[in-house]
Amino acid sequence: MLIAGLVLVLLAVYYIMGTGYLEQRREVKALASRAEEAAQMLAQIPPSPADLAERLSEAQSNYEAAQDSFLGQMNTTSIIDTVLRLADEAGVKAIPLITQPWTTENISDLNYAVFRLSITASGDFTGLAGFIDRLGTDEPPTLVIESIVLERATDTGEQVAPFEARLEIAVYARPPAGGQEEITEQ
Image (cartoon, rainbow, N blue to C red; front, top):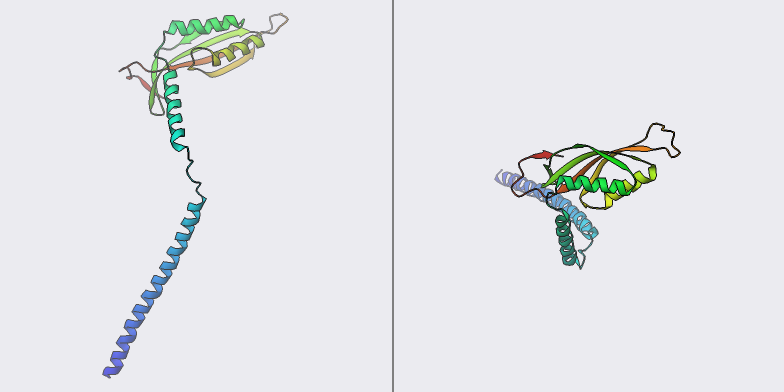
């Protein structure tokens, strides 16, 4: 009886150890499979470019140059005068309708001073197109046309049908030092 009990105990121990061993083998196979998948994914990642430090330096320089292109707050009268001069040079009649005071907006965690201006411009299509093009390319470099509504003006009996454009313009600048109280989210 003692031998039979001892055999049963040995079989129980062998069963417990054997099932634990089989379970660990399954885990090893699963981990090996996951390691193989990770190695394949790692092999698909392209190597870092050799000129990474150069490219980072160039990107930093470009970023600093872009930041430097943002002028300090400009005189609102000079901005309006510039827009009206560009309209005149394009043969377009422009009338500033609404201006808003400088505000500070947070864009991508950076604060910028913003001056908004609404303008109505009228003239032939070529003149309006030239005016809009010059607004996008001339000074100030941070002028952005936020919206344009272009309509054919009522028939005036002229040979060239006049057009009318309503433009919403924003000029971005660095905010004044310490003047970041007014922040509106965009």
